[in-house]
Image (tube, rainbow, N blue to C red; front, side, top):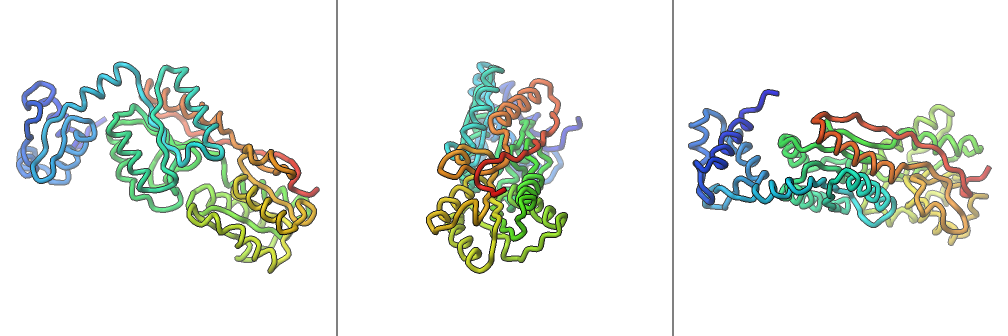
Length: 357
């Protein structure tokens, strides 16, 4: 593979550091001088320097210059002891995430790899901090659940940096569409389609979709909902799709209640079990008979779907299997040097009590 100009410059400076030609804590040539020496743009020089800073060979001191650092030696020592995979998820202890993480831990430990875990809480600033932590540590690979994957992400440049450094990366549950990233995802269009189709086959024609819109999964599940309605000639109004974000989730029960009062809805398709369970509890408190008067279907076959007086009809999510597959994907890619194939999991309906038959 032909190296880019900045990679060649980075390699030359790195060789001088390793050989001792440029000593520890010694300043390297200023950017303008490097431009002249290599006959390249300032942007190219800065890319080369950024690469070496990320790898621990250089450190930048504001207002002073760029100096040789020895952080790379610590990283090399870590790598000689045991390879480490960085895992960044949106949440750690909520919902289905502990099962996914458990699968990753099992898969990595069986291969002799360690795990460095971080959580973004679906927040860009926290995601940036997580990525910087992974870069500083010098992880050998990354498993990432994207943050707000249906919106522009200001951290895309950091992901590009990681990839340019040759760090393998696989994304789970969703992807950043702007990046050509490997992924392990459930077929979320099919999730939305099957959930809607199931209600239609149970004679429900007045449907309401409640979906999260800052994550890509919600966009795809909405697409599946619309496809099913079109295929079965079911009419719906714009008000029959209620959307929410990470920050507005608590407003969903109020929005749903207002729509139910304005229109006779008999079937409710929910983004996941978390929101379905919340709505089920709130609507039962309001006197709704479920599933006699209103059927509700969730998604992810989580623990929430199996508790309470009314067990949720839902769709499958591989959870722990996804975690094990992600671990196998990243280890195989590291050890073979070849990117592995994406995985798309097929969802299936899990029938319980919340849909009338």
